[in-house]
Length: 187
Image (cartoon, rainbow, N blue to C red):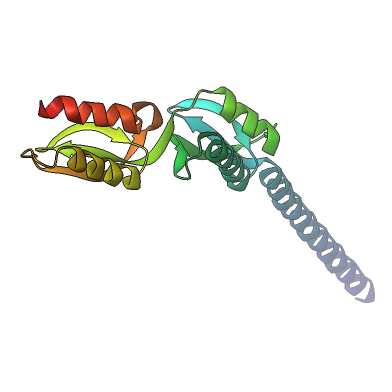
């Protein structure tokens, strides 16, 4: 009997040892898988930048893209002397895996080279509900209407007003051209 008890104890010890080994292996495998997934996703998460469906590249964070847009808009503000100028709409940031993201300077260069349309918070000049043209600011539109009313103070002027709109910079007219359009309209 003494011998059978020893054999049974040895069998139980071996079973406990195998059970510990199996659970240790399973635990190590789970930790390895979780660590691998975490490292891979942390290193490759970012955004793909699209402009009207065309891919411009990848950025690590949306802040890189926003900072690049801000720098370009600040440079445009200084260049055009308008404080309400913006890069065109149509940008989309889509989460993606990133292998070679653009840094800040590269992003600025890519955006500058794409010929993106510029927009301005301008104003449309309306006469009798018809849009005659747009200017680069609401103040300029109001000054234009005042100048036109001073020139034509004795004539019956139709309803002339200005409405604030976001408009492509290329569609705006300068003060003199818009005043000439108004004069031609009332003759």
